[in-house]
Image (cartoon, rainbow, N blue to C red; front, side):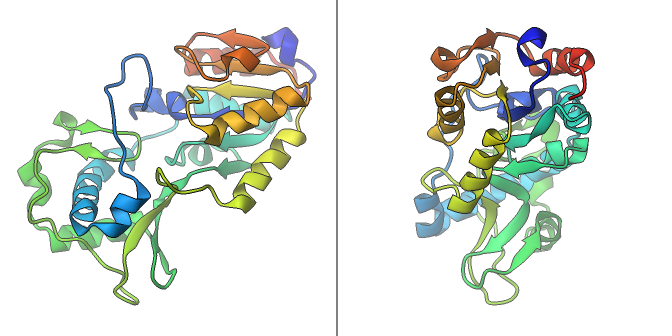
Length: 269
């Protein structure tokens, strides 16, 4: 892998697998339970779905907003600092690449740290919304139990038995519907964001894929783009990925040790 990437500027594409060592489970890893994420249509069309989403997210947020970058995120930041990586395209919404020190990060699916009003477009922080939800739902978290005993999904979705009675917060400006500023299943990634991601790949001479099964086209398209351009594609992931047939090199291993070793060995560009 070092010989393949040495002397090349690299674009990095990451998925949920890079964040598992930070305590955030992935969606499709070898040991991951089956998950059925809520779709955009369900969220906007059904108040019961919204109540379920926000109740579960309210509990899960206590866990995910305290997570910290792991050695995999830090290795990607080091690669960028030394001129090896041109930047990172991440399918994750956890902002851990930012916290690790990466400067050029394209959050392909948005981040769960910001909340958007679908009515007036006002934005607010998830921390501020957390404070409002506590006031609207006194004792709810305590009734659910210790967060350590609750299964948490990558998008801060906590698996809890009942969300009955949970009060959903509306926009403080217009009373409209609030939604995390993330791309739901059934939504499209904004065209401008996709264009920036393709431009990042085009600015590189190789593509390094880390911690993603590439099951959805959202990430796979960049692998196909790099392969068509004749770039080396290196895939680091536990388990098979949809991009394996296009990979120049496939490494079945954890992202933290592999990326750390790569950052230690690759010379600056």
